[in-house]
Length: 425
Image 1 (tube, rainbow, N blue to C red):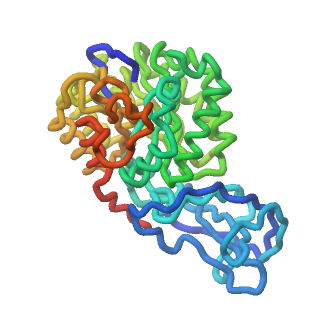
Image 2: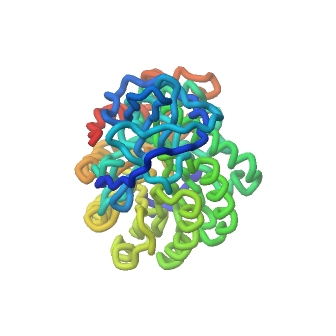
């Protein structure tokens, strides 16, 4: 989202395991994890340990795609820590086998009880987003503002608050392409996005890697840069099971066929490195499913992107995007997988009075269809759509509670904090 908008702008698992008698692998230490939040019970039956005098093996499910799953096997010392830098032979735990051709690099553990620990690798199943067991889930969380403007709002304290005090499931990391963003210093903004991915991952949240193209509205104009960015980010994070890739924030002024052709060029770039991550595809007219340019969801329904494990994005701002937009989202959710990666309770520019009543109508619909969402935005921008009061970030908080929140921040925090009801199975 930019500082201003055009007036019409919107917004399983069957397990099949092959037998292996003995595996030898080299493991690396898992990423350092933050203390486990108290927001949800830990997932059950996620690990098993070998009752054997030999080095025990920890088994962790990593994927439930294509009717099967991959299980990573990490040797541990007394069930505590990875055997750092050692090549070790061990027997799998009783009753378990492992698929020898699967990657054994997904060894980065999320803190117990967090959204990622409970749900694991996500996948698209039908029109829903599902966890590693094939059960539909709804993620709720926040989007950053442009990291070129508000990196000071993304600190250890603020991310702790988002994960623990707010209980967020997902952080959308918005890397603008233009407007002083990626194109000015690709290495810096790639490093910054990667750092935020790691920090959110350490806190057990899912991460949307948002390629925030906005102006120009044709995603093809940033195609080469997108290839480079997504290749870099995917290679750095291919061992994680909590990443979703949003490949074009808000296309505008171009046909759906043009957006579709871009998606069919970028998705293989990501799949070549990370074949399991869901990909989120922007839709026409500022990701309004075409509504803001006189179309509707039928153009996507009738001509979907030629790829699997994808979802289509929808953005809305409640004070501007009324019943026509809500109806399009409702119809679309019955036909295609939709993820609301950006919304606000204000007008299309993230400004003005909050329309909480209209916004709640959207949230009620999304809850009933398990449509995941992130709210715009986790910053202290002067606009009413930024959740923190101006100066909060410069003062390094306070981040928890509501004393530093604008009305929109209080409202969305309450809705993120409501129980997820995540099933472990």
